[in-house]
Image (cartoon, rainbow, N blue to C red; front, side, top):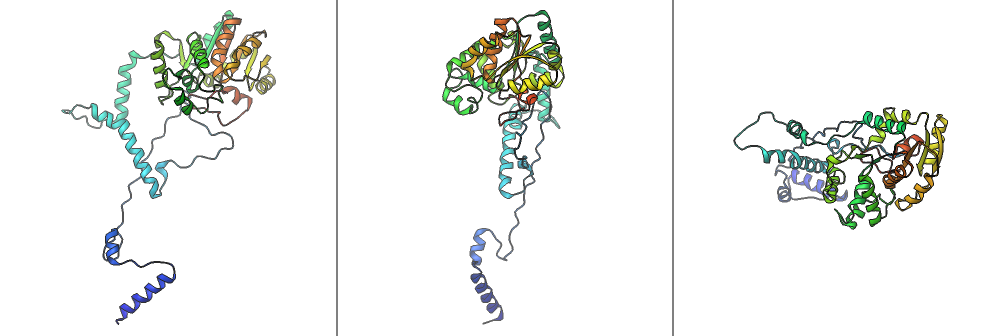
Amino acid sequence: MTSQATAAIHRSAALQRAGGSVRSSSARTRSGAAPSGRKRRRKRRPAARLRPAPRKWRRRRSRAAAGAAAPGPSPAERSEPGDERYVEGFRDGVFAGGERLLEDHLPADLLIPNLTLEEVLTAGVQALRPRGVPLLGPEGVYEEIERMLTERQPYALVRLGDGELLTMAQDIVLPADEVRKAGHFLSYAGVDVPDLRARDEVAAAFRIASRIGVPLSRRPHYQPLLFALWNAFGIQAEELPLTFSTINYALYEQGYLNRLMAGRRLLLIGNVAPPLAQVLLAQGVQVVGTVSPVQGINDLHRVVEEAAAYDFDLALVAAGIAAVPICVHLAGRTGKVAIDIGHQANIVAGVRGSFVRREEPDIRS
């Protein structure tokens, strides 16, 4: 026996004692390794770089609730081999939803050098601007509310987020079972699906509101669902007085809400009304009363009845989906101003929870 063979036997025995295994050269060849024993190196594809979305006050990104773990690295930042498939799938999805659509619409007899999807979208949106419906900005909404307060005219500012839209979609645009699955948060916001009475209450109220906040997000349960509902109800967007659904945050952050509260008698409505009242009273704001709790949308008529007994100038409502009909009914009954401030109330009061989100649309308190 040669010295090389003897050495090979010793190596094999050592591997077996260590719990390893010896594979034949033919097995290595079938598995893809070179017969020489050198492994083929698989080239790793470079990870795609995800372009971060711009942060604008009109398009709020989600903020983690207090105590939540810090977000991990994005898929493109992970380096494990298993994550490369995720990145590749993400890249393919972006292509199918963007570049592929552009490719299908480009002329076959024309090459446009250095064309980008963003450039095409920008040009396309500019061409479509004549079809657009104006959204009143924070300054305009503030001036509108200030005028109504000064003239003592009824006014209701409401906002439509995914909760309100899913509520109205029950058995109109989406089956109630699908709404229940998609809107797992609806019970928190005051609606237990199926609830067709709640659907009809919200649908009837928002149409007669003084100003309606609508979502800017293109995710399925925001603008697409909004447009589907308008089509189902036969509503023309041009007929509605619109703003954007995060107007509550903009009014506060730009100082307009404080100006509206100054020197006026406030009524606070919602589950966070008591702690909010303490904060505002400490700031010198005149709070004449609170209505709390609001036990879902089916409690709205009791809430309006109780609220109407107060002598107030401005009602701030943070009552989930029920805020839409509460604001409309309260303004109509009392001739006063009612504003749906949503989770801005939680933020001012220092009350945090798992559903306090700054992303459009926001789940209501």
